[in-house]
Length: 129
Picture (cartoon, rainbow, N blue to C red):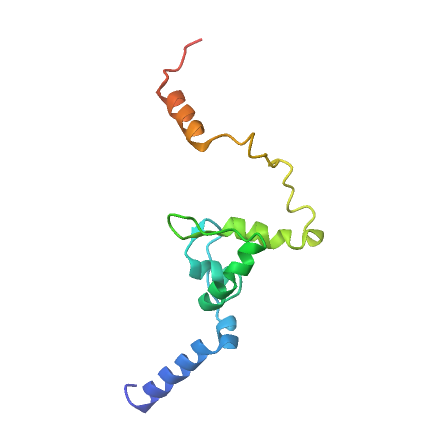
């Protein structure tokens, strides 16, 4: 298979991978959630990595979840919520966000203070009643 057949198969595979329509027919196993690299976020959106990068500024302008500043990874759960909120009339019960009311910036706790309080609580010995 190292002769002409191998070269022909390689050329066919290369052509298929470069063909956008063929790309969309490939099946990918995506994780159910969590932080993932850009290629996985692109696949969740049904795009090639290049198409995802091209569309990202417009997607972010429309509220698409941005990549983590440190890792550059995307939150698949947030992407799924964003996708469904585009068509709330189709998913009225699946996105009950009433348990997560929006907070104004003035009432949102400072992350550093929250962490400090949790550390203090963890270092404080438990009281015996």
